[in-house]
Length: 393
Image (cartoon, rainbow, N blue to C red):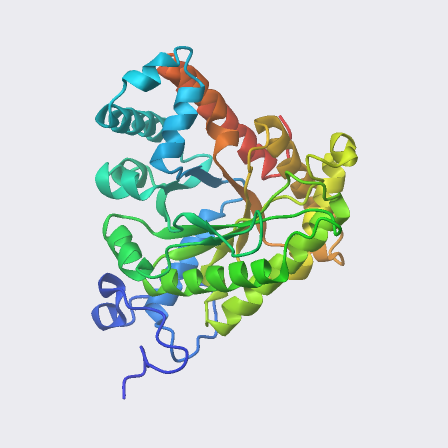
């Protein structure tokens, strides 16, 4: 019986031909490898590659991920919303829209700096149709892919959704790996209101936790580092206490299910939202970055296992300055914490921002000023890099 790739329970998580131990033998052994006890159903080679990629995405301190995985229709709407001539939307063909999306991505990928950015999340169209991953990989930036599908409502639960896409996910992620992707991301939206408002429901939390855990296991089976993204909504009337409680519940449940599915935590990452008062709560305008930092650090210290190498916050529609300030505050808090504090033991805390990085660049680009767009991306990438180091420019 072979000593590796033993098929047992749970099933072998790693089934990717180009990194199989049969082909690589003991080549996974490298100086400086993270020492981890691996159960028999893990391939040593595959496990250590996942661990190295996950670690590289959040190190050295300050580097983060640029999220560019909007669906094509969402990308079209976003670009149209910034255009001074709305009639152009009616005059563009689908092929013209497709070419516009490709040119926008090419502009940003050529501009993105590996000094501040460790990885970029691509939509499947960008990865497999436009084939733009090589622009990034030649710079030493790790390409990743959006894994989640579209949303469908949970029956009899208003404003809560099931995320589609698990059925054929393995083959899609194997194809993504063949195109150069080395990590994947799955977003699960979680409604959040006051206790009286009733969101999230228990069934929603359980569904999202199970879905994210299944995704993570399948992603690792395909040889990709999974990034689980519990995106807690802030459009309703939750206060900071309620938002913090919901974040802690959701993340705790996710890791409970990930353990059941045998996910290698050392080869995974999490992309949470910041706990925050809802837009409909009166305290929203008065909350301070320091309060957000304490709430977020408390959630992470209680709910994220120590084995997870890093946390990448999402910006979720926050203004670029707000997202940057909140990230700087939590890192400053962690760096100032005494060794006895649980905050001092948190993993790397960095960013996986989309609109916070590309909002200003996009405004310049739709007006035809590519140079200004590139400079704006550099400016916000650098600002986020400093924020992830606890520094404010």
